[in-house]
Amino acid sequence: MQPRGAQLVMPFAPATSYLAEDFIHSEANQAAFDLVERWPNWPYSLVVLHGPPGCGKTHLCHVFAARTQAMFIDPLRVGSTPADQLLTGHHCWVLDGLEQVPSPDGLAQLINHARARGDYLLMTAQCAPAQLPVALNDLRSRLIALPEIGLGAPDDALLMGVLAKGFADRQLRVSPDILHYAASRLERSHAAAQQFVARVDEASLVQGRRVTLKLVRDLL
Image 1 (cartoon, rainbow, N blue to C red):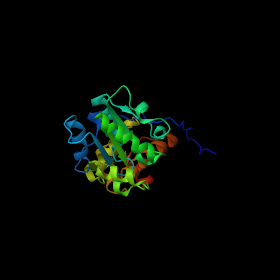
Image 2: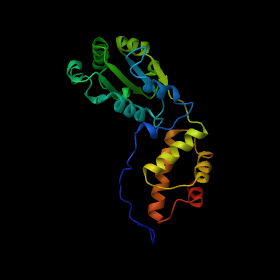
Image 3: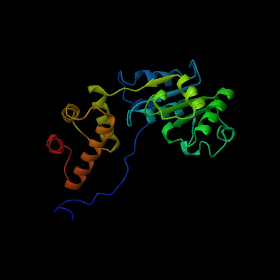
Image 4: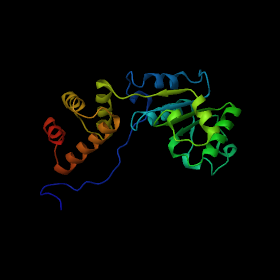
């Protein structure tokens, strides 16, 4: 039952911006961003970006795709579709989410095929390649041999930036003191920041209130 005066919240997803100019920079992610910007001057054409959920890996994949006209490969298709059929028509590719690939043999084939073609392949994972639960020795050795860049935990500036972008994606205007207050009290993770933005958005809609420091204090 809805509280008196509350509004019905419709489950509309926010329009997330993946533009390069909307990427939030900090020491935690600068090396990964610089790699994308240096394309095609890479020391090796295959690379793995890794970090916790919400740290910016998918955003960087879209920046890379916009820069290179790369195509996204659905991780669930790896293994069910031969690599020579997946890698057709382009020479730059994105595989966002190594953990979702169901076929170790298919992933090994994809890596081998991309390397043989000289294609560029940007892959992401939530942990370093050496920590992925890969039982196939051939695939494990290939992943460990690839260049990798980790995206670290956010510092104060990055966490405030993640909050600001999350609110902006939801078309919510917030003051700097709100960002500072929330960033100093939230868990130091991208996921916590994004979840908090969603909670604020919902509370604002349900209660019919602007996003104020009092509202944020109530939620924290």
